[in-house]
Structures are given as structure tokens and as C-alpha cells.
Image (cartoon, rainbow, N blue to C red):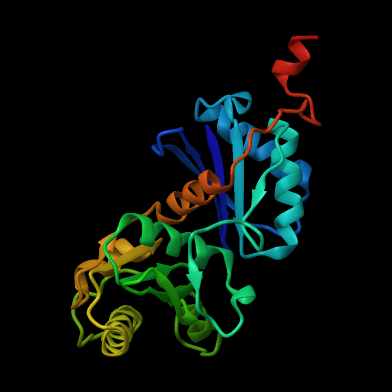
Length: 274
């Protein structure tokens, strides 16, 4: 089984994937760059065990992180609980993706993973919407070339800035408003956050299609995707596991037979066998 780790700015997602590519379990941790490898290892071990996964059954691991300071920490944590050296998404890995950027070396690993998954799994051209701390919309064209995209503040950050920058506006949940023309402050904030997000997405997708041509697939992933998708003018395909699917594809393109070493931190199983 593969342990695929997707570390974003807010959450870290652990995916357990079998050899056939089926995602068996998905677990979430809070991303915290101040935590040590021991803290991450302890949490990963407990979460896997609670989910019925024996860390010794993991035969490979791959990590994508947009928090560079955590790369070494996560790799050490994986080694502690599995005895395996995790693969890191970055320069030197085969992806099968032709990246056409001004400087291809600057592409973020999450962009690579979602683009690889879109290229392998969906009709092209594909537009990929990822709604997390930031919202990104990226393009893989009809020839499978990664062309780039846009990055802007996610709706959560935008609302946080609005509340911090004003004296009277309260914190609110992000959800569809009752109506667009709101008659109270809370509903007005909900309507503003929600419809500006939808309008922004539709506008970006329209401009992408004007430059690239009509998309055959528009894939949406991330925490807010399911709430937003029913309201856009464009038909969005929801894929919560696009990142993990991309990680599995990249791992398979680069995997080698890896000899398991004894975990650096002894678990209950290793102690009991002594």
C-alpha cells in the first residue's frame, strides 16, 4: 500500500492507496510548521492505527508539500513509522507532464500533481480549480501541456481580511446566502463572499476558454468546491481526491524496489517482537 501525503498551508491529508489505485482511507491533520518529526510521526501512527491501517503494511510513500520547511520533517516522520524513504514531489521525478512556464522549476508540487491526474484521467483540455487557502485555476491543454493559470486569495482569507479590517463586521461561516440582495449584515457578507467567488470563477473560466478553447473537463477540488459547483455557469466535475490520484500516478512512474529498514522509533509491534 502507498501512503500519499498532501501538505497544504492549512491541512495535511494522508491517503492510503492500494496497488490498484483505490483510495482506501483519507485522514487529515492540521499543518503546523513548528511541529517536530516526532510529533508528526506520533500523530500519523495513531491516526493510521485508528483507521485500521498497520504502518508495517505500507510499502511506499510519496509527499507533496507547499510548505518547504516541512519537507524534511515529514520525510523523517514517515521513516520513523514505516522504515521507508518517502519520495518527494519535485525536480528529478518523472511526471509525463510537459510544463510550459517561463521558469518550469518554479511550479508548485500541488500544481504538478493535479495536472498529472487531470491529464491521465480526464478528456483534454482540462481546467483545474483548487479551492483551499488560496484558489487556483490551472490549464492542461489538448496536447497534455501544462500552460499555467491564476492564483488568488481563497474566500476564507478574503473574509478574514474583511473582518480584521473593519470594526463592525463579524466572523461568519462560508455558505450559500438565502438571496443575492441581502437585507441584513450577515446575509450581505455571505452573499458578497459567495457570489464574488462564483462570479470570479466564471469570469476566469470564460477568459481561459477565449485563450485556450472550450474545455472538455473542468475539475474542481478542495474544501469549498462542493458548495460552489452547483452555482457556477460552467459544469464542474467534483474530484475530492485529485491530488492523491496525482501522487499515486507520479509514484508509479518513479517507484523502485525499496528495502524496508527498521523504523527509527520502535512501535508496539517492534517492541513486542523483541
